[in-house]
Length: 300
Image 1 (cartoon, one colour):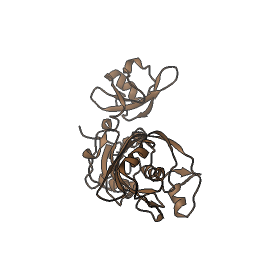
Image 2 (cartoon, rainbow, N blue to C red):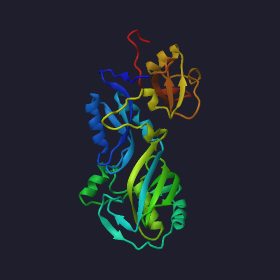
Image 3 (tube, rainbow, N blue to C red):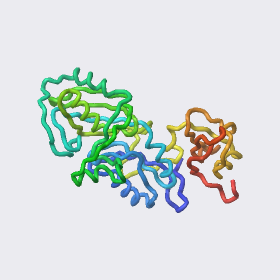
């Protein structure tokens, strides 16, 4: 199935990109605008410049679906360096403290990781894209300004540690909710062990069901059909008559849609084309959150 062409002639679809180190997420978007020949490009879920791995990029009308992708859980791999704290909580920052943690063994580290698994509260790092008072934290940090950050609830589903060939360097695998900072998790682990730590070599291996195995390079993107972008949502397939109503953005009774699972719901036409994403409305009805497919010239 090939990607749809957008209303202005550009493509509509999703690119699963393996972001290289040294690129910002915005760099990837700027590059793909040139490669794909359209300005309508955006990403879901920022990756730090030094990090690599899965970055989901929406093209054309799929940019309107990115909010559903941002909320998907994430999976990461990386290395936690015990004994050294940095200004950015990762290897890009300046060393701010050194701790003697030679006595920490892998079993102690794993016990500490258990305490950082499940529903936890996390303070966002200063070097992050989170906005406080209308300004991004990393902008304030570059000016030497540190502000109070309220802890936020996140969920760490899986936090596994393994030794490496380097002393005080642990291999980490993390599965977590959207909004979790793995850098902060590494720093919290160091503190829980009586010292400090920072993160290095972070790689995002999955966002929801989208894995690095299906990702392409920035230079050779593959634009997947819009329906692929919402494959992690509950979906329903409708007949031609209902599809015409959906294309017009009608508020509907849920019965004709045959909805199952938790909202939001991806609504697919009889030919497999993504029509819209629907969400609960008033009085037990459902309404379009995003309509992707516009009516045909004959009004259908």
